[in-house]
View 1: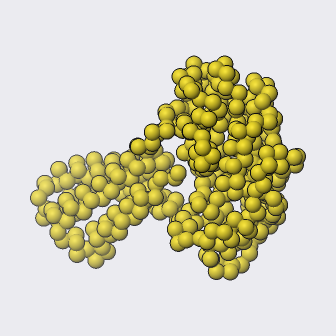
View 2: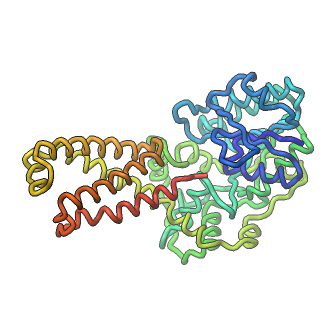
View 3: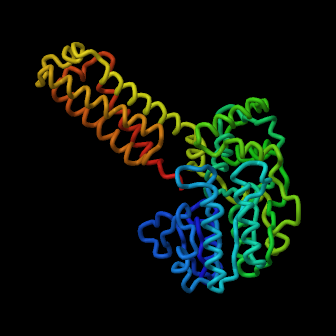
Length: 421
C-alpha cells in the first residue's frame, strides 16, 4: 500500500514511517520542511492546510493515511485547534471523499481535563470516528526508544542522568506503562493493514512508577549510583507553572496533570486487539547497550539551555554597555587606535544596538541558527578588528579579547546541537 504519514519527521512519526517501509509499504512523508534528498517527502503545513481541497492533490494514489502530527505547545499559527483538529479533519475528510478508508490517528493517553493538548487530540478523535467508523485511534502511554528521544522522553532521560542525584517529582510514585517506539510503530502498521475501528489505548506490558523508570534509564546510561531526592508536590507545581509561563520545553501544567493522574491503560489494550505484543522496558534496555552519545545527549539536556541563556545575557549586557557607556569613556578606550573619537563612539552605539537585538533574539529562539551564526560573526569581527586596531587588548590582564575564543567555541557547540529532530 501507499501510505501518507503526517509528522513523519517527528519522534513517533519517524518510527511509524520506517516500520511501514519495513513491512513493504510505500510511504509518503507529509512534513513542513522536507529534507534534501528525501524523494518520499511532500510539503504540508497543518497550521494552514485546514481545507479538504488542500489535501486532495496530495492523496493521489494513496491507500491509507496515518496522522502522527502534533504539538505540545501553541506558538504563533501553530494552535491546537489548527494542528490537532481542523487540519487532520480536512485530511481525513478528503481521504474519505476519495475512497480512502484506512485511517489511523495517533492520539494521546490522558483525560481532556488535563489540558488543551489532550482535549484537542480527543476532540479530533471523536470527529474522526464520526467521519468514518472504521478509523482507528491509538492513544499510547509514554513512548520511548533506546535509539533516540524527544520532548518528554528527553527530559526524563536527563533527569535520570543528573550527577549524584535522582530527582523524584512528588516522590516519583506516578504510574506509567512505557512503550517502545518500535513496538508502537508495529501496532500502527497492524492498524493500517487490519483496520478495526474505534479508539484504543496502548501501553507496555508492565506498569512501573516514575521512580522505577528513571532508575532503569540511569542504570542503562551507566551513571553512578545516586541519592534519590523527592521533590515536594508544591515545588513540582511551581516548576510546571514556570514551564507553562516560559512556553518552552515539555514540562508544564498538562504534563504534570497527566503524570499525577497516571499514564496507564484503563481499557482493552490495543496491542491485544492487533496481536502485536510490546516488550517490557527491562527487555528493551537489556537488548541494546547505551553508547557514549546517549550519555552526552542526556547530560547536555540542561547544559545547552544554560549555555544559550548565559551567552544571550552576555550579548545583552554588551549591547547595553555599548549604548549607555559615556562617550568620553568610549573615546578613552579607543585612544591610540586608527579611529577618531567621534567615529569610535558611533561604532560603539551601532554595535551595542546590534548586540542587544541579537541577545534578545537568542533568548526568544527566533530563527536560532541564523541568530547564533550572526553572534559568531560579530564575535569573530570584534576579535579581528579590535585585535588589529588596538593590539594592546590582547594583553589585557582580564583577558577581554582572548575570552572571545572560548565564546566562539561555545557558539559552535550551540550551532552543532541546534537540531532537535
